Amino acid sequence: LAKTTQPISMDSYEGQEVNITCSHNNIATNDYITWYQQFPSQGPRFIIQGYKTKVTNEVASLFIPADRKSSTLSLPRVSLSDTAVYYCLVGAMDSSYKLIFGSGTRLLVRP
Amino acid sequence: GAGVSQSPSNKVTEKGKDVELRCDPISGHTALYWYRQSLGQGLEFLIYFQGNSAPDKSGLPSDRFSAERTGGSVSTLTIQRTQQEDSAVYLCASSLREGGPEQYFGPGTRLTVT
Image (tube, rainbow over all chains, first blue to last red; front, side, top):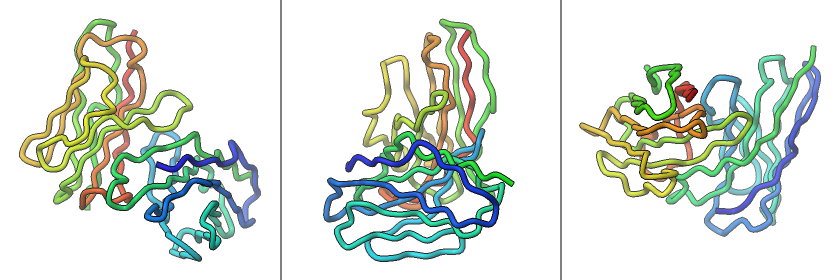
């Protein structure tokens, strides 16, 4: 599974757009990029998944450049409740049952 | 519908005792996973079930750890002769199909070994 690197922490303010970038230089051809969110004292929650270009759902957008060596999770107009740890994971769809979570990015949203 | 449930939510035990942690996956989910998360750390994969069989037990840290799943549903993670380094949050997840990266996690069981 490809190793991922993301910032340890980020600060933002309510209403701002937050972009969290993840590096995965050795991503394989059949690897997908998946992001999870974890609130304190809760299990992680799936946010979004993508393979290339851009994916958008009701929660976030995921931008993946052509070389796929990085990806950016974009959270529009964050609120205090978006304070959480965000994990970037990379793995093949058919073998990614063993999710490998790194240290994640601790996002703090301030009023 | 109901999500993944785990019990107990908290467990404090003395070093050397055995503990059992339970996971009820989402109904109809054939795949079930156990992870653990130590304080301030990312998640560590322990074991994966497809139905009642465990194709991948590679993450179990020692032979004191075992898990079973019955009826393709409920799973129990057993830790024998607990040690202080076993203290962690044990998370269970399930998914509708094997290999899918979208796993649904339970709230976890916080285990403290004194």
